[in-house]
Image 1 (cartoon, one colour):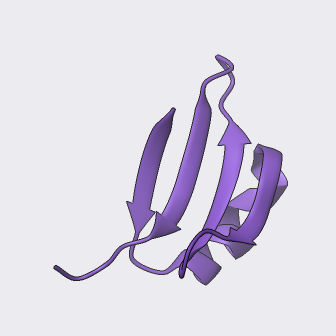
Image 2: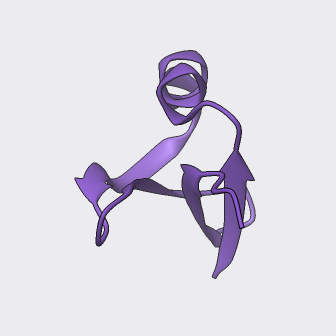
Length: 53
């Protein structure tokens, strides 16, 4: 599985969900939202909000 951390999760979801094969989400993933989709090669990719360290 691969993960993408995006600057604005809600905007990413609004702009991309019509173009990807969603497997699950958006869901609460332990204090942050996540969405999981498959890319054209079948890889599972998780998208989450970028966090500050």
